[in-house]
Length: 221
Image (cartoon, rainbow, N blue to C red; front, side, top):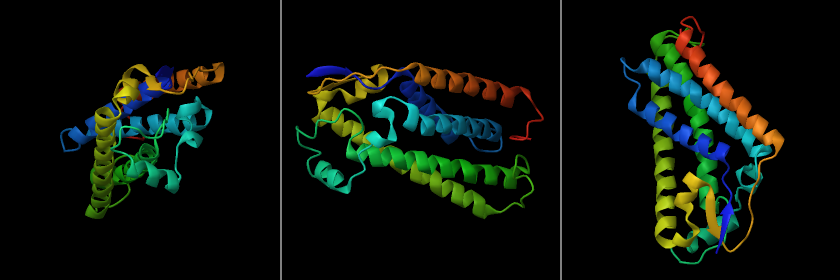
């Protein structure tokens, strides 16, 4: 088995930032913590914009074209998922590909419905002109629950990989970027990818400070 570097630092920073923001959103949202909930939601927008762009300009295994979305491959993978030997995939396997695309799309819908709900209930933000209507909140919660289901599938996939395909070290790769495989390939960021990642890093920090400091910003007030 070869040690392959497949998840770059920007990819891993995005992953854990995304996880942290979703956890914060899950733990907040009541009357006392609605502002934290809204700020976290807006920061998720920046994270999503980075990931959607990274899916085109990022390194090989972060690109959307590397996602295995073939129904035939998905079926084959599902039938052999509990076997010790499956397709030697360095990037996202077929099931993970579908779950990850689903998470990105559902989070996008959560943010949109969240902005509408925030405007309706708090009379603030871009949709502050809307009348209070529980329908917005119900739709927002529906997509949130759908996200939790997708996250559950994602965690199940990691558990199965850890138990049945230990040699690949998929779980460790989320932290250190390295994954074991019979293949031998390592990614390396070019200058454009590094610049893209830095722009979004500074943009993320700047937007966060803007939301905290400017009490007249149109996103929250």
